[in-house]
Each structure stands twice: as C-alpha cells, then as structure tokens.
Amino acid sequence: VLGIGMQPVHLIAMAAFVLLTTLAFLALQQMFVVLLGTAAGRVVALVLLMLQLSSSGGTYPVETTPGFFQALHPFMPATYVVDGLRELVGGGVDQRLWAAVLVMSALLIGSLAVSAWSARRQKVWTIARLHPELSV
Image (cartoon, rainbow, N blue to C red; front, side):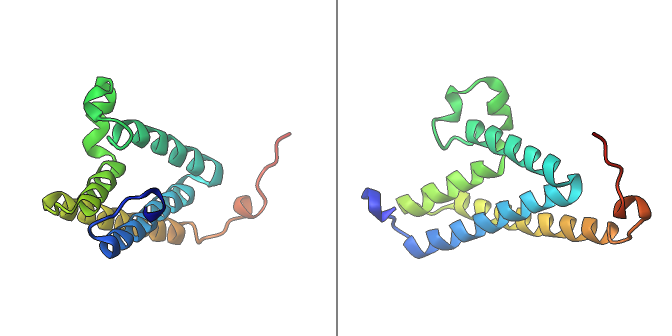
C-alpha cells in the first residue's frame, strides 16, 4: 500500500482486516479440501476465486458486468472484502465495514466448524481408505 503511494486512513485496522480475510479464505479452502478431497477441493476453490474476481466489484464496477455476475455479487465473500478495504483506505467507515467484518468472521468460524466436523466424521479408518483401489 505504501509502496504505490496510497495513504490508508486506518492502516492498523486495514492490516487486521486483511489478516481476518486471509484466515477466512484459508479456512474456506481447507473446508473444500476436507469435504471434497485434495484435487476436487482445490478446483472448487479456484472456480470460486474466478467467480469472485468477476463479481466482487474490485477490478471494475459490478454494474458493467453481465447479469449472471451481478446476481452473484451479494453472495460472494470477496464483495465484502472489497467494501471493507475501500472503507479502511478511504476513511469513510460505516456499516459496510462492519458487515464485511461480520461476513468474514462468519466465513472463518463456519468453515472451521465444517472442516472439524468433516475431519471427525472421516476419522474412522476402513480397509478401503487404507488401501484404495488404484486404476491405471
């Protein structure tokens, strides 16, 4: 931020929000991997990332995107990240920042809870899990 000449109004709060966002998205990816397996979980996370880049309004206004992305806009976590960072950089802190903090916190807690539940459910080892079939 400072390297490109931006002077964020709330630098420490911005760093804390970026940390929360990082933890939330890492937990979300971990949840996908635990639920779907390594390969499928990573693919789902990548697809979600691409959808968010197109629909979050961070790269260009969401109003200029096709209707599909406009419909996804309110449901994508990155939408709230963009809103929160805009508030912290610009200084006009209002309910959008608190909504972003709430959404990211819920995403973090929810993803960790689902990961823990799924990992506990998969804790039982069977012969099929220990020796999976290999197909060539």
